[in-house]
Length: 284
Image (tube, rainbow, N blue to C red):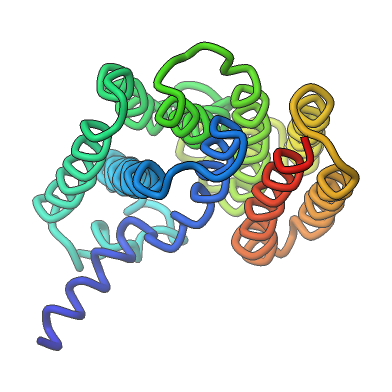
């Protein structure tokens, strides 16, 4: 039993299962926008399973595609695959399990979800390769998570019609994730430059990259403001957007303390945005 639990812990670490908390708030936010309040519990359950499966698939693919690059980097060479704590076959099995969970959940939602289900998978396969060719790879990471509120919205509505509100939430998510991925990449500036890995810090240096990250976050907050102006209401939601902006500003100021900025503040941002959506929808 102890051996099985240890193995499960390694698999969970492989896909950073705790990072699902980054996607869950925007996923549920898209569902709330679509329903104009709380979605049906059954639908919300399948949406959550689809999101968890998609997140597992995305992280597993990222680790599998990058495991040789990770082995060269002192910061990442202790990850499960390059360190030899897991086999490639195990990684593929985890990716398959995520894909199955995602596929089963999509099959229980409106037919359009099943028809569109390959789109996120294409993005999950595509974005890890971007760092090999463009310093804009951070925006590929953001796009992968930005699909979450769009998918949840379609899962509730069963159509692409009137999806504008979810597009603004997806716009925020895209810029938010890209912005903090730029901050995260500052950890590998010298290594990436030396090994030809494309990132904004490696291309332009840390200071200029952080300015780009700040501008990206500003665009994300602007997307929330537009979402509020067109689809939400109430002083509480507006105050929440102000707080989101302040937390992102703190993230920029604490960019040198990457673990605090990346893991702790970002978790707060996600749930703040969900609170904005709930408060603004219920007030509308």
